[in-house]
Length: 98
Image 1 (cartoon, rainbow, N blue to C red):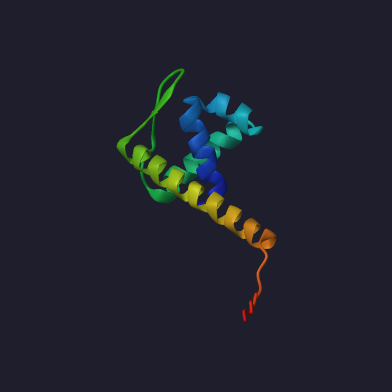
Image 2: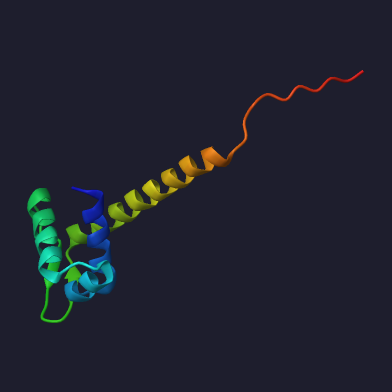
């Protein structure tokens, strides 16, 4: 399971349509469909109930959505903290008083 595919998954969940999600992600619809099918195959569960115009999540899909949101949030927070480390001043300050 790749981080990029989790982002794809969340975009499809948000858009409720693979074609719309593919447009948002700037990739082709067949590529996105293949990535999602591969994700389902890798984890061994069905994530979507596919309709003619709209898709919905299975129970397993809902669980993955919650976990994927947590993972992406954690990655974003970690990247932000690492970037802030470069901006932080560090060192030792000594004060003397008489």
